[in-house]
Amino acid sequence: MITSFLVPEWLVQPMTKLLEVFLKWTGNYGLAIILLTVVVRIVILPLTVYQMRSMKRMQEVQPLMKELQDKYKDNPEKLNQELMALYQREKVNPFSGCLPLLVQLPILYALFAVFNAFDPTKFNYTYQFLWADLSQRDIPLAILTVVSMILQQYLTGMPTTDPNQRVMMWIMPIMFGWIAFTMPTSSIVLYWVVSTFFGLIQQAIYPGFPRFKGSLGSKGEA
Image (cartoon, rainbow, N blue to C red; front, side):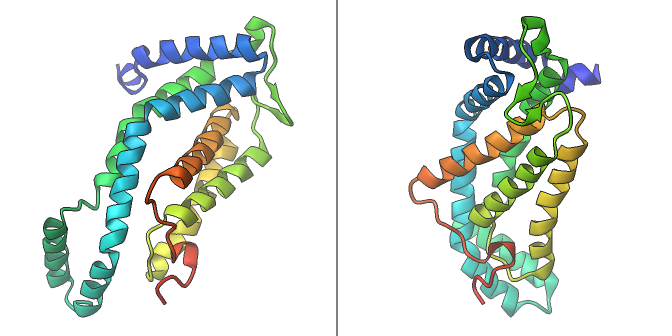
């Protein structure tokens, strides 16, 4: 029951069918995954735009947040009260950017189920894509996972002078890279890498989306 809830069949079946169509069309399993990734990113585009707008709005109020943090650094309770008042006054929600990620979780679960069950050899195709055997773990794809997430952090990371947050900005890509390396197959890793780079392209063409400074331990506001 839990498995069927986490991996909804109404998502798995059309994704599997679409992956089969792309495989027969391109003749390559890796290309089929890339095309499926593009389709998924287009479907969730409204969520992506909403997330970008939320991040942009939070970036705009960042200087005001910094002023409050400096003013009430010795009074955490008062700081929290003032921050909440700032959020209400500026009509921003610091957690609004997380909502699209939560909505995408069923899609990720469904894709994981699709790639685990899908066998291109049944259609007389192999798992080979460029250098990678997508039925096995792949170190270069794990490294690309880290690189893509570092680029994402650099472009979208909120400016911060907190050393702990800067450390986390480095730890998260490395942690996801390790998860990618430990995956039993690299099919889902290829999806993740392509999806991340596709998201970076979307950010590059999104009107008014700023290129943040101060991410990944750069000096930023200092």
